[in-house]
Image 1 (cartoon, rainbow, N blue to C red):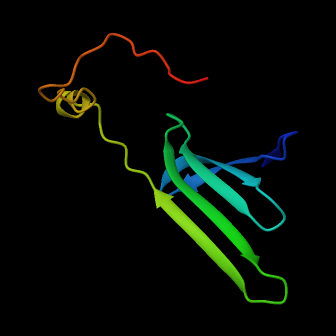
Image 2 (cartoon, one colour):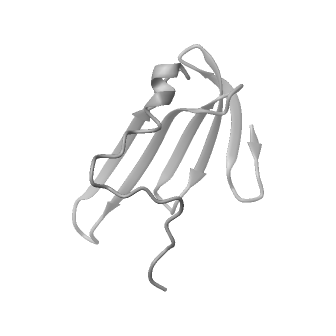
Amino acid sequence: MKVLPSGLVKSRGELNGRPAILLWWKEGPHDSSQLWVDATTYLPIRSIAHQEGGMIGGPTFHTTIVTDYDILAPTPDNLARLHPPVPPGFPRVAHAEPTGS
């Protein structure tokens, strides 16, 4: 385990039998997040967010949100999904300029 100057904790281990790196950080006195990434590709495997809170004198709550990631293989069919067809009537532009200030 290694604690970085930012307070981020980095550790190596396994998740579901895969070599993984765990990144863990605090987001306040009671909240924290974890991100598990593949040790070879650095692609996300799982994220976990823990939250705790409540009103003074009232009930408290504890929430844990777990998200598992499945990364599709870069097959020709999956890569083709990155370029969806433009519906008829929509103009094609090479580069759209940002609007506003």
